[in-house]
Image (cartoon, rainbow, N blue to C red; front, side, top):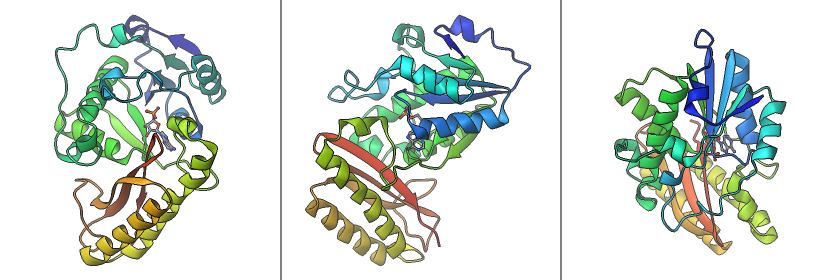
Length: 275
Ligand code: AMP
């Protein structure tokens, strides 16, 4: 595996071969590796980008303390057959910041509302990575469910010639969704954290096939249970899969989505609701 740091080096990739791109912020875990393996299976060349994107962090968020370990990441990416790890500097990606993509629609609520500018940063960097790497297929994890909807919407709205592939959320044995940020959890918080997945399952089960009244009852029961356990619930909702608007499984194809605080750590997760 080769580490590339400049756009000039990326420009030398063989364009006669199919390219799969996995955009990441590093500190790899099994969720990242699953995306890399999926890319390895169906492309001649696999490029993984490792870029902690400053523009998607708010001023009070964890850009400075976000976990970073390039040597460990390079070993892990190499072990699953990645060809190129693209590790650009901030100056390489943002020699200036005079143009940005401002997503609307699926970006407006939830993460978009609580983290102003977040999806603008995500959409802009993902669009730049698409234009730099020019992948045939790009891989994203459904762990970041709203992000998937925002990127799908951007690709459709701007006619970006890339195929998107979304992969299921990889979880720890107790159900906690893997995340680079899980290292922030204390021992006690880590064992409490699995209750989030349990409550998402409860909401999904109690909402399946139901209308808004039953959905709201399930949400309020699980919000109370999580609060009792020490979580601070940022949002817990049942939303339409594509628009991210509150909905009910009776009306459309839905996911239950949540963001919670456990101490100083913010966790997000979601689950598809089966009929
Ligand atoms: P990140 O490095 O956190 O920005 O994540 C890079 C990619 O990996 C994104 O597409 C994420 O949605 C995906 N990802 C992160 N955690 C998981 C997980 N537990 N399961 C599946 N995909 C994940």
